[in-house]
Length: 287
Image (cartoon, rainbow, N blue to C red):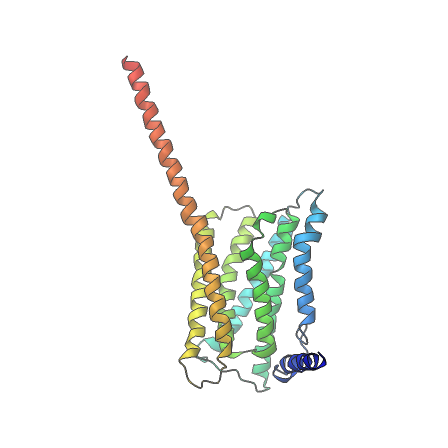
C-alpha cells in the first residue's frame, strides 16, 4: 500500500511539476489542479443542489440588464482573443498542418502563454451561462450536452495552459472565439428582446463545422512527421470532438429536423381536415 501511494505521489509530481510548462506555473488556478477541480465541484453543486434550493420559493429573475452586460463582455473578450490569435501567428506565420510550441522565454512567447491562459479564464467565465439558467428557473436547459461541453472545455483549456500553452492547440481557440462572438451576439439581441429565432439553427451548424475543423486539425498530427508538436493531444481531442459532433448532431436533428417534420405533419393534417370540412359544408349547402 505504501509503495502504491509513493508511486501516485511520484506520478502526480511528474505531471504537475516535471513535464509542466514552467512559464505558466504561477498563473492563477494553474499551479495545481485542486483549485480548478474545487471550482467545478462547486459549480455542479450549485446548479443541482444549492441553486434550485435558493430559487425554490422565489420568482425567476429576469436579469435582462445583467445578461446584456455579460454578453457584451463576452463579445469583446472573444473578439480581442480572436484578433490576437490571428495577428500573433495564424495569419501567415503558423502552419495549419502542424505548429510546434516555442518554449523559449521571449516577450512574444510569454504573451502567447498569457493569451492561452486568458482563453482558459473566458471558459471559466462561460460557466455563468448555467448559473443564469438556475437564477431564471430554466433548469430544463441544463442538459447533459450543456454540462459536458462547459466542464470539458474548462478542463481541456486548463491542460493546455499547464502543458501546451501555444502552437498547434491555439487553432482551437482561434475557431472557438470566432464562433462565440457570433453566439454571444445572438444572446445579446435575445436579452434585448429582439427576435433572433432564425439565428439558432445556423449557430448550431456553425458549432458543428467548428468541431469538424478541430477534428481535422488534430488528425493531421498523425501523418505529419517530426514537426515538434506531441502526438498525444490528438488521442484526446479527436475522440472528444467526434463525441461533440455526435451530441450536437443529435441536438440539431431533434430540434430542427425531427421537430420540423412533426410540425409539417400537423400542418398537413390541419389542411386535410380543413379541406374535408369545406367539402362537407358544400355538400350540406347542396342538400
